[in-house]
Length: 259
Image (cartoon, rainbow, N blue to C red; front, side, top):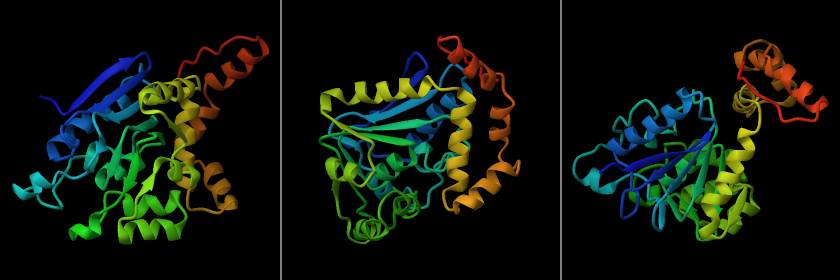
């Protein structure tokens, strides 16, 4: 049975991790997840992905049973890295993590690799790795201090401290919190709102956000204007950059061409 289920909702790809009991991730599951995100990246009919899990867990992270059976702590999880997304740096389209429950260790790191997180009221986030003799080196060490206050991120990494959904939202880790039975609808609504935007503008925005994340504003401007970000130039020179103002002036919905 596949560990990853995909289905289409118009321009949205819904990716569901379905590996009872805890949606733990081994190498084979990472490769399945990568295949789903590669489909998102390569199919022009798809604009956004919503990633979720089944049961109580979004994901318990690295499959410790696989570890006991010989999977190395530094095993090669494929071109997308652990969980198929944590090192898929060239992915050109956004992913929304719809965290349905417990996001533990690598499961939390998978959510951190998404562009946005929508959480169920039952969601919890934590990194237990130091208590297992390892480190959250699939993005936890690198991404968490960028999205939470540094001292809180350090506490979570060094102690395994948990955040519930409400606290996660209060610190800006999560953009929306909703009832468990409304989670997928909430995430799909957000995905549809993103898909209303121009494709090239969305790609350029994501590239600029990533490239300038550690820069001062003036340095960010210099990089953006330098020509080093091809997606920014492609957006400026596109037919869609003419279509948007024309649609506004004509009081109609824009017809994006992605070119």
